[in-house]
Image (cartoon, rainbow, N blue to C red):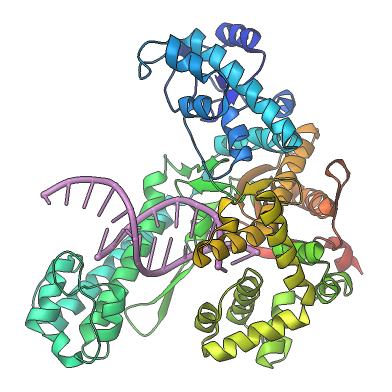
Amino acid sequence: MLLQILGSKRPVICFKAKELLRTAMQHYRKEINWKQGNIDLITANETETLSPPVADCRVLDPRIAAWLLDPADSAPCFQELVVKHSKKTSWLKSEIPGANKQLDVCTNLVLLDQLMMDLRANLQMQGLWQLFYNMELGLMTVLAAMENHRIHVDKDALKRTSDLLGTKLKQLEQEAHKAAGQQFLVTSSNQLRLVLFEKLRLQELCENKKLPKTVLKQHHSTSEVVLMQLQDLHPLPKIILEYRQVHKIKSTYVDGIMSCMKKSYISSTWNQTGTVSGRLSAKHPVIMHLRSLHFSGKEPEVVTIHPRSMFIPAEGWTFLAADFSQVELRLLAHLSSDPELLKLFQEPETTADVFSMLASQWKGIPETEVKHADREQAKRVVYSVVYGAGKERLSEILGITADQASQFVESFLQKYKQVRAFTQKTIQQCQKQGYVVSIMGRRRPLPHIGAQDYTIRTQAERQAVNFVVQGSAADLCKIAMIKIFILVASSSTLTARLIAQIHDELLFEVEDSQVEEFAAVLKSTMESLQHVEALGVHLKVPLKVTLSTGKSWGSMTELLDSRSCSH
DNA sequence: CTTACCTTC
DNA sequence: TCTAGAAGGTAAG
């Protein structure tokens, strides 16, 4: 019924309870334990590699079922699930003396069975069974395999950067002491407050500005906004700001990873039911958030830290990353059928990058002159606008006035007329049925869609639009993961393994000799998802996958299509 | 604008 | 003094 298999932390649940239980008892050295809120029954101490028969298995997890019905309540414990979704709640409450007491295993098995049957009926009624059975349950084994795999980390390099950042912090600390004219604990906001406001009396130099006070006591705050306002008056605030930035990077991205390491590797835990949009989320560490950090070194030279380059493939293996280019924008083109937007993707065998193109148009510079930052800005602008950003927010991003920003929004939506039609249609539909649906049938109830309160209602409206696109992108990525997993599992030669998923990017570790072969099959498999017959998915735009390889995650170079190279 | 996680205050 | 939660920063689109 409920097994924790293959050394994975992922609980696994089956219908054929008795059989599995017996088999499990025979094959594993297991202890039966029932932990409330952590619904595992049997813990297998032995591990086994995931092989095709396992890849095929479907085990019914009520937590995932409940999450599909309403992604808003993410990780309820078993008892909560029973109370919320099972008809047999009375059974739970009345016949078992002491509701808080741990129930015996048999009782729980009966409850679990009933719960899963009720959930099944509900899923089928809501048209979510396919999604549950084929997508989410199929993904479960993929995630289990991914969690089982280790990502090697260059611990020495990590240690070196940690030390480097440490010295940088020491330097900044000394500078701060010099600027303050005294020793003090830089990390302490109390001591900083004493120095800034009682010793240096900086607040007297800017009485025209209002300095926010802490809520409880009427002290001056030392928060970032305050320091920003003070930075022209004295060197100290700026030093503190830089100190805090470097300190944060060090603790989250360097020491954070280090503390998650076991020996020489890390292995994130993936949460399948952690988001409302259907995306995955990862913890320990959040490999999704790693990025480069630039800061001034001792001399004028600039030191750059690449946390991703600490991640290295196993000996004889290479990282291969596959990225769905502009997925959400492509999906928006499909969903809205906007002719201008469709043209962007359909017409040119797109050599050009959409965001670079838009950046060059908006900034009036040739496309070859478009910098990475320009592209990034264009991307943020596009997504902000289509997801309903207000003029204030947009003016922040673009660094223009609110009036200019609202003009910008107008002209954008004027050019891509059907985008607005799509958002309106989505909101209407949500108002009518109380939920929105992604391209593969994932749904999100939005009870506040008809709220009286303007703020609450409009937020729900934006969430509705966002979900349809973001949730569809999540669907696509999940299908891709499953397809590739099955493909590799059923191949007699391929050994590639999935390391991580960063939303629209899949990171694989591939044997050196197989890189080309796998790259080709990966690309075509992912791009073929434009049409998924079984799910009735037929996108009006092609999907584009870009591949890159490298001997570290930090130094990936684009892998160009071998076919286009040969021409 | 949305979706996450993690640290600081 | 401690800690829960808001705020703010990061990522992704």
